[in-house]
Length: 163
Length: 246
Image (tube, rainbow over all chains, first blue to last red; front, side, top):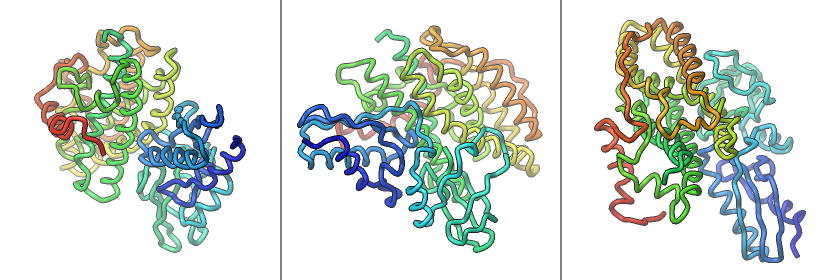
């Protein structure tokens, strides 16, 4: 019988369709795995953002991978609380993001507050390493990213924002 | 279906969905690319929040109900969104002012709802609150920029305050299905909303509206003529090809 440890291992090879260098374990969205019998397994995941379209694709990828392992009844359950945070992203995930050209999230203490024009956190340019960067927009190509530009190398880049 | 929780979920979901739909009308039409992307991101968050609420409402209703039947197969009178979100977008300034009014309401509402005794409502509020924080910040910055901007932008923002003000009162008058409260004291939400709105409008050098008379009805299903057009567009596929799937 396929045990839970094997399934966790399997998830190292299921990737976020929008940031394909991150596995779902790097993202920190898999909460629980319960093998109930030879046929039946339940996986509990938590969404990054309420409207993230990648969640449906990820749920489907999990289902396909487990069906391939011989399970016939696969339940993928979504839970909302406690709400996902970038603190759950793995260290190796952050390194992979940086190598991919996306600035990894800073520590959670710098998370967004509702106050207008608050002091911006220093975000390091993933290309040249400079901290001399500026926010272009808090909303980027996907819900989880903000747009930045480096004032030294002039390159625009995505920042995986604290959440 | 007489369960107040069911109707409360629909009210929250409908308001988020309709504003998400209105914002999505800006897709490809924003004043600059970055802000076009920002508003469509906000639309996506709102539609995601609506999905969570519809899924919960569908589980309460039971039977064949799904998030899709609730969004696509109810008519105007069954929709419970507040009137504010169904109004036409107007110019960019009016769209961001409406977003500021609504997001600020959501922000203080969800702050209380996360302590609701209803576990699923609390979870949805907890998830949504993190996203709404970005919306409050983004929209308030734009209200300040445009109010305290050029002579023309200021005049347009003053008009927008006048156009929208009478649609804000409804948010704080509980509908019949809101009476259980679900852990929310609307009077507190109203007080916090008024303080925040006064502070931001002040920073934007905009005067608070003196209008005292307020519109109402949306939360109970009596809408402006605009909602019918939105639903006609949003639901046309399911109405024309019932049961169509991707």
